Image (cartoon, rainbow, N blue to C red; front, side):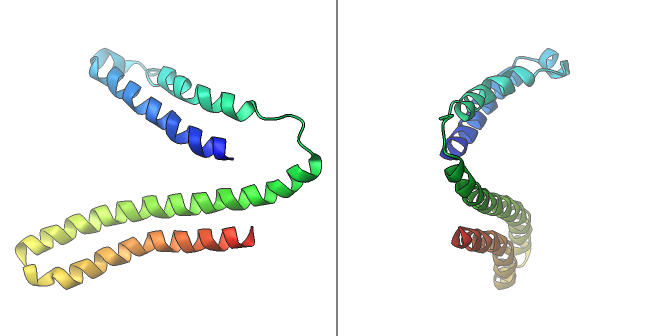
Length: 137
């Protein structure tokens, strides 16, 4: 489980610079439909190797008990990640609108911050769900 949590950001960190480098080389790379396939395969290679090279002699009882706990942990991670991404998008839009409104009417500061705070509340909901899921673990 920890291998997945470590390798996914590493794979993404490897994919993005290679993709940018290929995009800078010119329009010929942009027209090829498989231009992102090579960097994606290079980034996912270490992830696949790490996931498949675990101990093969695990006990069946340990695998059964760790299955439900790992599902709860994955659910908690998805809840926090989804809520954080949603909150980031919401704060980006509401924050930009709040700054635009404040540039014209500075007296709207309190109302604008309440709306931005409501958007940040989305991340807190995801955190609460994650705490509930980990508590059931």
